Amino acid sequence: MAWHITSVALIAAIPLFYLVIKQRHKRSAIQHIPGPPSNTWLFGHMQELILAHDYGDHEFKWLKTYGPVYRTKGCFGQDRLRVSDPVAMQYVLNSQNFPLSPVLQQATKILAGDNAVLVSDYETHKRLRAGLNNGFNTSAVRSCQSVFERVAQTTISQKLEAVAGSGSPVDICTILGAATLETISEGKDTAVFGYSIARLGDEFLESNLKITSLSASQSSFQIIADAIASYLPPWLLSKAIYLPTPVFKILLRARYLAEQLGKQSIREKKDLLQQGVDVNTDMFGFLLESNKAQELISEDEIVAQTQLLLLAGQDTTANTAAFGFLELAKNKKLQDELRLEIYSFSGIEPRNYDSMPLLNAFIKECLRIYPAVPNADRIATQDLVIPLSESLTARTGEKITHIPVKKGQVVSLGIAAYHRLESRWGKDANVFRPSRWLDGTVRKGDAIGPYANLLTFLGGPHTCLGWRFASVTTLSRYAP
Ligand code: HEM
Image (cartoon, rainbow, N blue to C red; front, side):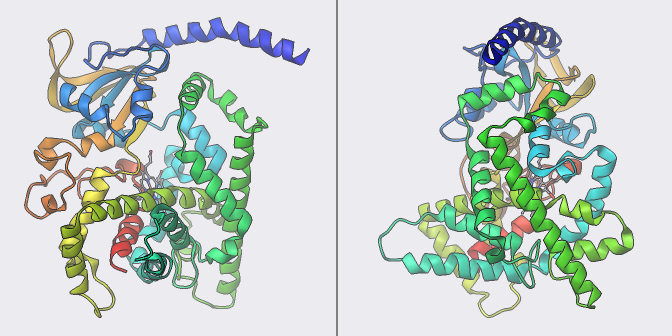
């Protein structure tokens, strides 16, 4: 009987869904923007973009053909605006009217809770960021440098040395993933939680692994499921959490375990504070201490960031370092030059990474060619006009310098594509060449993104909270 009712409801929902799609797509104001033709109404260009063998297989070709602003098709005939024009990207990133898509917001809330900084409302976000920045500013990150170096020595170098010369293949991604989790979590003179990895426990580590594997998997089914979800009202999306599927069970368990970890870390620090012990030895300690006076962020709000901090920093940092190792494996000369530079500072403590130009150039090039988040989607909450740095020729032949978009328009920020703009990074923008940062090839000037004019850590109010942390961690991976 229940099966019968579900089938009838589903069949009845199909024409309704069709009408909603038709109504929404009638509103597209960007039909005159040129873009690649699409062969399928169901997927549009989504499979080419998301399931490409190497990231950008199609996107970088379209960039060459259509320039930094063009139109692509999403599922069910949706028009999407794809931009890698720096002025347009800056406008979108700094506007309150271009939040994350409701589906992404909901997925983050399910996994990290309603109070996670990424999904908090504008005013709360401003306050939370002011509080959280205390734990991630230059001096807080500098004080973690010894942890980064210790983990690089013990968890990475020693493991690699143990297998060196054996002829056995090494899974560098697993080693770097474990090292990054350890860096974020670890004990005395520590990084984020001040909580040794051994104390996280097997259940936590297993759950963490499931979540990182889930977030790395993509499929055609997932593309369609996300597209359908984007047509559902937010109140219905928020009920998804009650679906008894294995995926939701994994997400909820992971969130629960992260909350327990955050609560325990804060409890232990408060006990230490009462005994007069300095807790300024990790980022949760910094946050607790600095916010006692400023009252920007409550203890519960610090705890609420645990899962996001664990997930946002883990695979992103580990994968960037892994691609760096890949480039080194391909280029023996670069390896030798880097080794020479790093060895020339042996015995000088603490390590001053700023005085190693080639190492810095190498990290910047890894962040440019391999941005861990190569694309970010935003949705217009009202009718808006996006400015462009260069004019483009519409399909009507008209030259335009601004693009009006309607409420609900999806704007995909092509972070990886922006990193391939020849006007900015040189004629050989597609090539991995660290020396471009030293020989004047890279165009200097307008600050876009927090680091080296790159958008790897995005920009605007939601700029990556951990960008300094990630940069210094990555530097220490090569110069332990
Ligand atoms: C190479 C490493 C990393 C990359 C490429 C990266 C990239 C990003 C990007 C692109 C965003 C913006 C997401 C969006 O608005 O759509 C972001 C946000 C964020 N990242 Fe990172 N991230 C890295 C490492 C870290 C680390 C190590 C941490 C913390 C330990 C961290 C914590 C965060 C947080 C909390 C946010 C949300 C900020 C907000 O909404 O105000 N990230 N990151």
